[in-house]
Amino acid sequence: MKSIAFYIGILGLGSALFSACDVIDNPVPAPETKPALSATLALDSAEAAHDSINGPVAPMQKVLLEDYTGHQCGNCPDAATLAQAQQGKHGEKLVVMSVHAGYFADTLKGAPGTKYTYNFATKIGEEWMKDFQINANPNGMVNRVPYSGSARYQGMATWPAAIDAEMAKTPRVALTVTALYKPETRVANIKVRSKYLSNLSGKYNLGVYITEDSIVNWQKNYKTSPTDIPDYVHRHVLRAGLDGAYGRLNAENPTNGAVQEKYFAITLKDTWKAKKCAVVAFIFNEQTDEIIQVEEVHLY
Image 1: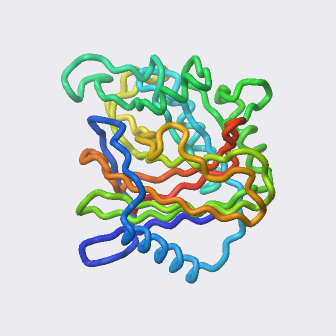
Image 2: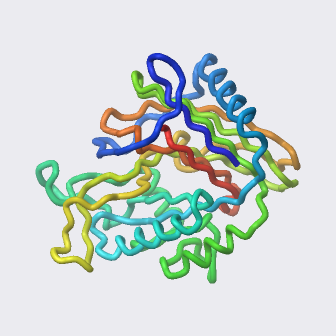
């Protein structure tokens, strides 16, 4: 699996490093449809250029850890710390998405910048929390597969073992994500190419989402004094979905070697700092909800 990101400046195409992000007023921007033909051709060209330079890449099984959290959850910083430690251990093979949802993600009334007035929550996150019957924070899902029980969600204590178990599986699909970002228009054009590596039965959906890293804002932590931290760094925060909560059909009963190519476009909110934003794409079984592959690419 490969991730390809290109920064498009006024003078042309180039890659760049990413830096910082900030807060937003409305966490769910309106998604856009397939990019214009010129943009799809540019995505195809960028993908081909990357392939010609880097050559074939052996398929790698990657894993998605969804950390269901909230800024008023005093136990949630421990879960975030564990998620970062696991990402440090597994590197790019582990993708982390922090989903602010539920009671502890609620906001308080007050002037902007005061405690817990900032809204991290999204409609998509709330929908997932309800659909997967996650009843408290912190909790998480690892590829949305049940581990040591019938529930897909689990407490942080079992995350490491569940991640190891999912990572040991043989890849069933390879993903390549290409992103072209134009800072002058704040439009991100995205291509996701999937190649199935075995014969599979059922319907498989593709979900594509935007996350933002390193947002500095309030967070409660029961292990600190005072417990209210004004400059906590929130990592990998879910911002939006480009096709709603559950994406679109990618393939039905795919056969070994089958390839699908999907295109997307989204205009980032002015208050998003694109240099810390990323595209997260994953393929999942529509019936079981199991995520069989995930990929992440930063816009810079």
